[in-house]
Each structure stands twice: as structure tokens, then as C-alpha cells.
Image 1: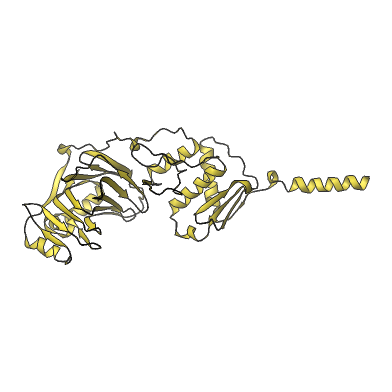
Image 2: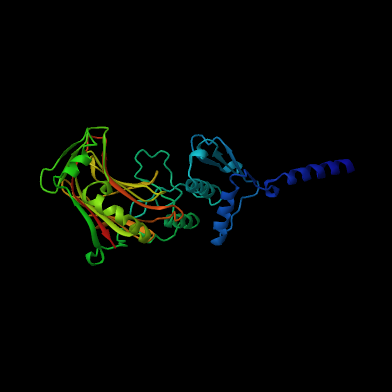
Length: 360
């Protein structure tokens, strides 16, 4: 009887000693920083995180995803191959998303904010054949998405409201530095001659018509052509130091795709697209981020685009309506001022009216 009691005691000790309540998390060293960051964000919001006993966070195969959560096993597996190709911000976004599933018991959420961006970092693209948005998880957006992760009732941020207008047009506060109208000139002809497959003509004074065959491209860089070439190089350093300028141009899309490129520094690269197959659709992209705009485009006529940068923030306006606002979040990256107009693929044709640069 005594031996029987000892056996039961030993087995009970083994059972309780191996229970998950007494097991420390098993976390790959390369993933520990994301787990620590998540706990820190939770603590700063007075959110208690339970279920961490016996938690496993490891590399392996995530069945096509960057990472995948297995609630029954209290485990998250990160794909060891795909992880290598993911940016630092996307890594944090992915891990916080999976922690949301496992520790906060949150499901997927594909609702959008008023401006068309995703409402939550608990979004998913699986099973979505027509994705209208792809998230941006940097700068001012990062704080909002983390707040929403821990509190689904987080207020809609100011930048997501359609009525938001951070830099209203005020002609009295902007000074014209250079204006490029497209008149016949040797300089214009010389510049355009480097695009032998494209067709150019000036159907009316000051209007440049551009036709591109499918698969070909054209890039108009104002600092390399005509009046802009004489003015912009001398002013570029001033703009980069003050970071207060405005770029304005007018275009009319006739077919294919029109694209405008902008780089405020060596890290951020944006493209604004207008597609003839969906003429009321706009797309601003940065790496894999994009979302669509509608209702502001004037079909079969000229559209005016304004890009305004003030300090560490910049916005895009279309025909006087505010579209997009964000911060230039990589302060350690060298500032630059690169912008160009382009068309590509889909047999694009468009007219350019003018291109202007203002000092604010």
C-alpha cells in the first residue's frame, strides 16, 4: 500500500510538472524581440496577456503564409523562407497579427476606414479575389493599428476621415518657382527623342500629347527638361532643407494607365495611378501598400493633382479633394526630391497641360 501511494505521488508529480501552466515559453531567439515588443505594447495599455505558459514561437513551414497560428497547440510557426524577404515593419505587423489571434482571441477583420484603408491589422487577403486595399504599417498608421489591435473600439484617426484637409490651398502662401508649359522647342524635342517608340505631338498650345505602345514606358523628369532643368537643380537643396514645397500638374487620360512617381527620401517611393479601364479609380502605392480612391476624377477631361509637403508630412489632392496623408517616417534616411510622370503598358495615351513647382 505504501509503495502504491508513492507510485501515485510520483506520477502525479510528473503530470503536474509537465503541465503547460508550469512551462516557460519556447521562443526562437530571432523572434524574441517581437514577443517582447508585443508584451510591452500590452503593458503600456494596461492589458493583461494570458495563455503565455507553454507558448511556442518557432520557425518552420507556415503552409504558404508568412506565419500561422495553431491555437490548440498554443503555437505560432513562422515560415523560415518567406521571413527572409519581409521588411522589418512587415515582420512586426505579421507577428502582432498572429499574437492578436492567439492571445487576444481576435478573428479576421476586412472592414475599411472612411478613406478606404483597412480598419484593422487583423485583416486577411486569403479568399479575397478583389482586394481593394493593402495595408500601410508605418509612421502615424503604426500607432493607430496597435491601438486598434488591443481595443476594437479605437476612434477613427483624423487622417482617415474624408473631410480631413491638412494643407488647404492658399495661393497667398505659395510662391511659384517654375512652371513648365509644353510648347514647341528644340529642348523639348531633344528630350523626347530618347523615347523612340513613343509618339509625341502638341495638338494645341501648351499641351503635350503622349502615346505609348503596349509594354513601353515614358518618364518625364522635370529637373531634366526645359525650364525646370534651369530652375530645379539650384533650388533642390533649399527644398530638401526646408521640406516645404508643392508640386502641381494637370493631365487628361485617354487610354491605358497614367502614373506619377514621388520620392521624398531614399527610403520612400510612391506612385499615383489612374487607370482608363476604371477611370474613377486611384491608387497610391508604396512597396506593397495601396488603396483606391473614387468619385473625384473628371472623366475625359483634365484632372489637377497637387502634392504638398510641409515638414515631416505630405498629402495628395485630386481636383481640390484631399486623398492621402502620411508622415515621412524615415528621418535617418537622406532627403531627396524626385518626381516624374510616366505611362506604361496597356497602350497608354494622355495629355499633359502644365507642371508647376511652388515654394511654401
